[in-house]
Length: 119
Image (spheres, rainbow, N blue to C red):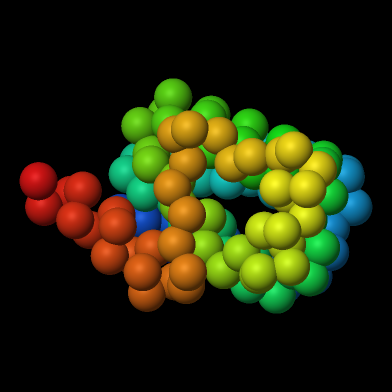
């Protein structure tokens, strides 16, 4: 399954709408990083609102994408973490890494990236 990567100004938006296999997550990671490099995106929003479950591989992959995006000059915001997902991540001892911001929804994620740009 190919997940669309939308470009809005200098921000890429990726919406994950269903559970992904490990292979699909790896392909998405490469696609996102290639797109950041291609268009020079300064921001990346990964929207996981539709996910009811985030396993340890997905959590590690989100961290890896965000860290690699940072190395390419793109700040990452993960949006739409559901309360049950947040609780599960905490119970498993998993964290979103220090460089990754989170926001309640897409609108708030865009605000975070635009505020940074305005500084």
